[in-house]
Image (cartoon, rainbow, N blue to C red):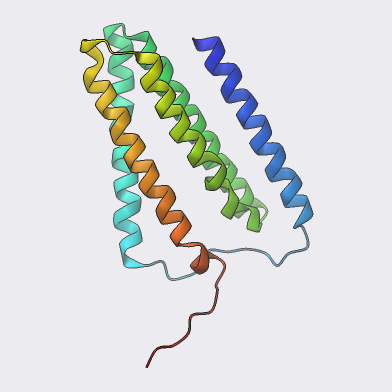
Length: 168
């Protein structure tokens, strides 16, 4: 299982990175991109929620799974965190290093793949009753990241600074 997930994640990472490099090169003459300021008030709440439920909740569960001998859980959540770290690295490089509009595309590549990872984790863990709570965690993560993806989509006009018509 670990070799399979390694190859699957490696192929995704290479394809996603290649895509971002090609698109970044194609848009190299675009005006440097920066986040719109100020960020909305709800953003801190949502960002904190994603941090707590998407990182701080599964991390100790992953560690404890390794301690308790549930290697399949350790592998599934381990790859989840590897790909999450690579997404964050891609976002840092595209936004902070290159100030490139490609930054906006990074979550649109990684979030659907994360949903696939979590779904695949449900399948790989099977229906063992002792792992039922891990399955609930994976479902919670699917709901969280689906909401995050929808929120990302809803913020496209703001990110691209599309003009808003004033209503009187």
